[in-house]
Amino acid sequence: RRKTGEISTALDIQGAYTGEATLAGTLNDPAIAFQVRGNDWQWQPQTAFPNLIEPLGLVKEETQTIPIQQVIVRGSFADNTIKVAPIRIQIDDAVLSLQGKLFSSQPNAKFQIQNLSLDRLRNFINFPLDANGKINAQGTVKGILDNPQIQGEIALRQGTINDRSLPNSIEGNFNYTNSRLQFNTTEPSFIQVQANVPLPTRSLKGDRFNINAKLTTEA
Image (cartoon, rainbow, N blue to C red):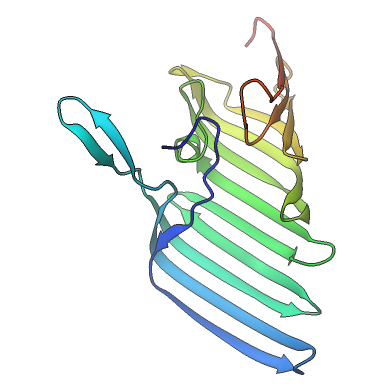
């Protein structure tokens, strides 16, 4: 079973796709252009696990699958660098896109997230509160695959916590490096939150985190 705070890395995805590629250059210095398109995929981010449920006993419990309506990948490979322009993924009403240099000596890519519901994020992260809303974000990705450096801006729209409405939009910026996430709000001014947390968490004793929140009477 998935442990609290553990982010899924499983890629159990089923669905049909079409693709094409063109090859140019030389054997020592190839240049490849590629395109992949898929529709109506199913992603199971967590594998099935045994669970003891009364009065049924031991059963195999399936986790929720995520429908992926569309996947589009366009890119090229040359000079030992993969460029994507763009990768576009649609999940429900959410659209995730990424474009730039990947798997190069100096990776540098831009990403954008639109209308990603917190409900979908529960497939990957255990929230301590009953929070809902939709996430918009944009930023850059640098560094190597084992230690990415991600920074950008994020906004929570139509948010609620424990069925209580939040301001229509809560905005902030974030920075993720060395497996730690730093976040602080910028709008509205009457909500001020600063956080420095490990992600993913490894143990309750070994991971230190710091969260500060200041709310005025307007909040």
